[in-house]
Length: 257
Length: 257
Image 1 (cartoon, rainbow over the protein chains, first blue to last red):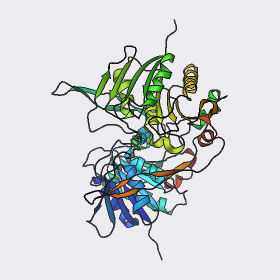
Image 2 (cartoon, each protein chain N blue to C red; image 1 turned 90 degrees about the vertical axis):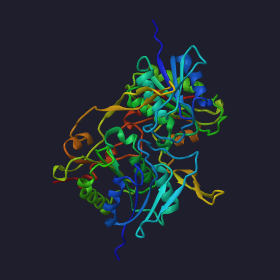
Image 3 (spheres, rainbow over the protein chains, first blue to last red; image 1 turned 180 degrees about the horizontal axis):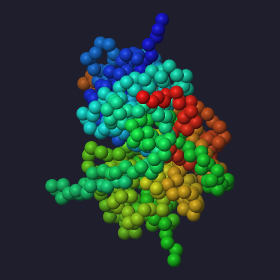
Image 4 (cartoon, rainbow over the protein chains, first blue to last red; image 1 turned 90 degrees about the horizontal axis):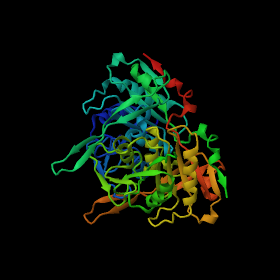
């Protein structure tokens, strides 16, 4: 008997975003799926969890072939609720996305898409986040589909440690321009912020966050290099935030009383 | 001429929380301070940024000795706004907290307090987050004060690389029980979630997130060990989320077309 893998799908752009609808299409032939995704967009929400308001779930009755829930909470809430209350057993894989916009370099830190994947990995389930380098709602997700399918199949058939976590970014180019898939490390980069200061009709000041992303390096082994050269980047993600190489240098902070 | 360091203070429990008021008391003798903290509690907000609503700032006029702003946004918004729009120059240090509750082990991922510190480090400023292992609003912050002062002084006078980031947790015990300060790595742990499913007066189901934290290890070099043994833990934090040791193992995911 050939048992199909069980795959949980989520995102941060909301359950109706074209990115997750594309991901569902890609994943369905590869296993049995359950979808638990936010009702609304939670882009830029990082690893937020909902602690002070109750969480609501809405079962979507459109399909008889798989279960689909919209959740009032964040991407991380979706994963926690799916793993603990909704799924018949632990899934074999969690996939998140396809995000509308890049989550390469340090942007993983702000990403709700990657927060869902990281939460899955914390729960012991191998998880992958997919992001397309196009922020627009009507981004063209077609070019990446075959590669996403290949990556998911490869990970499902691999012997990678349970709870592995991967950050996949896809250049926004046509299929014939994509050069392949490259395993990378996270490039160094940062945002130069420029808050737009405005005055409302009642003479109150307010601010809009905007900014420009700065590449701090472009080494061939980084995700930024891969993406600029039309490769799909895949970065293995750690759950250990210790800066191990600094442990000895700060030993002088220790004291005993 | 002895130039006093410039120190930015923020938190995630909100500008009126006893934790940040304690931190302000501790930090003021050590330098010139500016405070930019959320109007309300943003606990559990991870690295969220505000993208879809405008951000408001309220200057607090209580003190003539330092500038203090309440911000409608998240801890990360506070840091971005302070660094880019409010401060006369880049601060020498950013301190965040004192959080009401532990941010040891994997809890750094969910923490708004540590998100503020990480955002500071991303901006090139050495940053420290402080957390007390007591979630209550009226937690007793007295025992940790002298140690917090020592850690900040030591970091200010150290030659650590700019943009270093540290996660400090303080056991909730009396001063004479604290054994000292220990440099640690982040322990492995995870939450076993238990969503409380309830029914509202209109017959709608809703969920409250709750759970139990599980220690997956208790090695002497970890922050969980230090805290259980009444040491203050300090973990150097990385901004590189690459799981470097897995890079070779997943090379088979690469392809060229």
